[in-house]
Image (cartoon, rainbow, N blue to C red; front, side, top):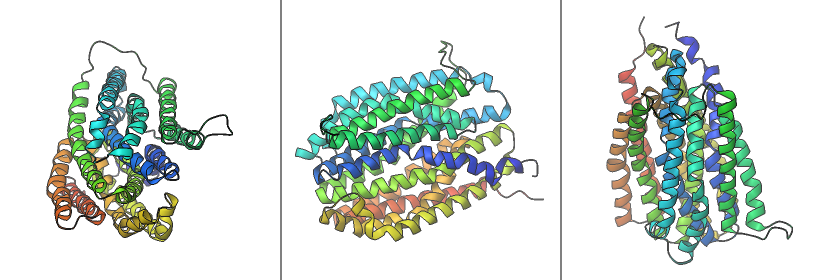
Amino acid sequence: MSRGLPYIESKQINRLAIPAILSGIAEPVISLVDTAFVGRIGTVELAAVGIATSFYLMTVWILAQTLTAIAAIVSRYYGSGKLGEIKSLIPQALFSNILLGLVFYALTNFFSPEIFRFYNAEGEVLDACISYFNIRSVGFPFTLATLLLFGTFRGLQNTSWAMTIALIGAGLNIILDYILIFGWRGVIAPMGIEGAAMASLISQILMFCLAILALLLKTPFNLALKTKINPEFKWLMQMSLDLFLRTILLNLTFYLATRFATGYGKAVIAAHTIALNIWLFSSFFIDGYAHAGNAIAGRLMGLNEPGTLHLLGKKIGKISLLIGGSLMVVYAVLYPFMAGFFTTDPRVIEVFDQVFWLVVITQPINALAFAFDGIYKGLGHTKYLRNLLIGATLLGFTPVVLAFHYISPSLMGIWIAFLVWMGVRAFWLLRDFKLRYPAPTG
């Protein structure tokens, strides 16, 4: 027991988690900033950015599962001191992500009108969705490649490089949003919703370039693409496929929620957009300790230290619960002012205030679910995570949201379904972890 303790000290967890929090919130911060600025233009534009952002993030999450898979592999080889054996894997995975991003950029652009009609978007909202998305979606290959590199850095037990890159990208996005959406001193004409998309795209390209530099200058890996496939490429694809299927189901919940909210009216989808962006921001924030658990769990497996996993789960679980509880308190205090940060429409504010308490109380539940998600990913238990999400989505979220839709259609029903969904995930992960990794005796 004592031999494993140094590898799971709170200091080591925090060293990985805190930068991971800051890097993980870059994408939702970009979306939140877009939402906040565009909300000043009008309700139609706010609804359109909400719908388009929901689909964009959904697609990124579905496709970017190699981030977690590559982190699990790299951390395991890092722990065993055999990084040279996967040197060819990184450029092969990077090229695959770029190619995948290009394919989805072409497909989603071609079918963007049909895609957003599935969200019940029509008229001005549909046109605005297409305008925003067709620019921002150029970033698919850059975003997927950047996330793959962030996963590589995490496997090397370093999250500070990703943090620095993400903060630079998010900072640039804030500046460009203001300039491109509203114009600048007569030199740059106001571009409105298209300016918000362009600001996000430029920020994503910059982050990709900086991540490539970090890979070449700070890691033992390079971009030399070899024709012989690395033996671990198959494992990478197997884990990615499990997580890919899991994330499709994960995002089915966001699709159903956004589709129903859109059908309930412009004010409802606008309020849902604000609530969902806050929920996603919190999720990425909490997820920093899941990233730490992902990296450390893989390294412990590489070091053949499974006996310390119970203590790892206990420590990360407690810290994540504390963060989730703190977010709950902060949101409760800011409750009367939160909607006003994003819109001045009184109807949108009224709808938002009716449901935001559900976002508030989910924070500790989310924290536990995400913490053990990360540990299980690092250990390679991707099939279990896939099957758990199937159960939580099909037996938890879906029946609840459908029941409310047909009995009492409202945004309240959507967010109660989210609460049930996360509760099921957190409960079963905790139960399974205790059975798999009991406290060491003696």
